[in-house]
Length: 174
Ligand code: SF4
Ligand code: SF4
Image 1: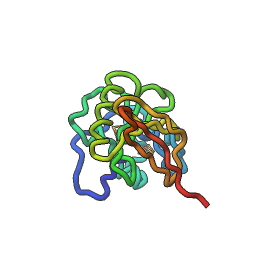
Image 2 (image 1 turned 90 degrees about the vertical axis):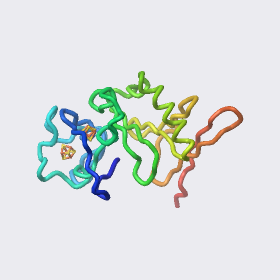
Image 3 (image 1 turned 180 degrees about the vertical axis):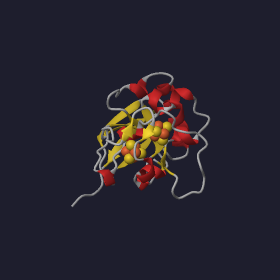
Image 4 (image 1 turned 90 degrees about the horizontal axis):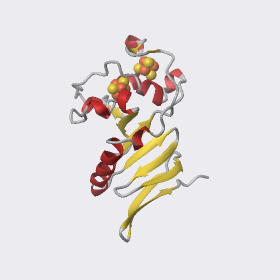
């Protein structure tokens, strides 16, 4: 998520008819799980409780809102996934509509995600696709499915010979 709360910066784009983040992300204050429409969404118009919506909703702006270099095809209601910065990291999260789980594999998206992955790895970052709670790391030459990511788990990416490798490093649990 792109938390705007910590900055005075304001996005220049508007959500318009898009409401996809209101389906894909959980809202604890409303007991709303990830992957299901918020009961307050006004489809095609925005939030039905705009004035009183929770803080987490006020603070969230996806990368399409921030980044004017992303064309109209990247708008979440069209792409069927939301680009955001994974909380507590600099990784790019691609959170996919579970109703269209293969949306990120379509072109031009998949090709561009691979290109971004190469740039991200050069900066010690990653591109990670989430379909529900299952994670897939996008590498410059392939995609690696990692399964369910749990709190504290880390993704380790490196080169093994000519190929990129990725694996899940599980957090220590007592
Ligand atoms: S996914 Fe992005 S464009 Fe769509 S409603 Fe959420 S913040 Fe707005
Ligand atoms: S409260 Fe409004 S902004 Fe927040 S998830 Fe529900 S519809 Fe979206």
